Amino acid sequence: MVERKSWSLAAAHITLFVGSIVIMFPIYLVLVAASHEAADLVGKTPAWFGGHFLSNLHITLTEGFETAVGVPVKTMLINSLIMALGVSLGKIALALLAAFSVVYCRFPFRHLCFWFIFVTLMLPVEVRIVPTYAVVANLGLLNTEAGLIFPLMASAIGVFMYRQFFLTISDELLEAALIDGAGPWRFFKDVAWPLSRNNSAALFVVLFIYGWNQFLWPLLITTKEDMYTIVMSVTRMSRVVDSAVNWNVVMMTAVLAMLPPLLVVICMQRLFVKGMVDSEK
Image (cartoon, rainbow, N blue to C red; front, side, top):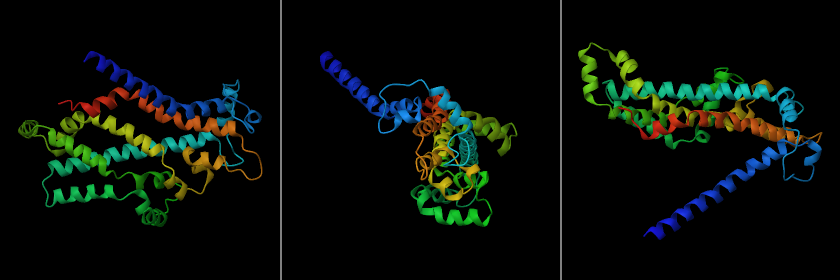
């Protein structure tokens, strides 16, 4: 029995090790390419790190790939950060209020309203992107932060998660709040919201990565270079017609594009896990 467990444990560790190598190898190649000069990457990929990582980082942040994109990478980083924060915080705010209304506000057809919201999960962005673009264009929100953020703020999965959490809050808390004279807003502010903070932190991590990695929507509604996001610009950097591609700058841009989501996951890892496995009630 012990021998079988040891063999299964060893097989699990070997599988995880091989899987980690497969996942990390492309990232390793990106880091290696970002540490070399452009001439070192012509027709080959170096196997080890070079000595130009910091100089490539400085060039990428200050000059970037202006011949291909028109703006330095730091501008694209700011645009992506604004979009990711706006989408994640907006989705959480709307989902919190919608779920609270569905669970605690007594109005006709509230369950039907929730299922209408939930059904939208079956409609991917690509299905509704044309009418969404038409609405944004008619409102004059093309090439704006609002146009990048507002169409992506609605979150059916967020409403579903908060609704399921609010349903687990005991009725005694609601009754005690009503006896103390608390209204809906006070109950939300003092009871429902504090109890759901860990869930909000977990949802924030997922939604921040979702907003940061958006490619199709920014590509569709941004035509000005100063509104480009970093994820959509990596592709543009590799499509230079009149000159050679500076792959060291392209790879350094890819490294910078990976850093903010990675930092969010690392900094909020404990809250993320706690929000997924602990209801804190």
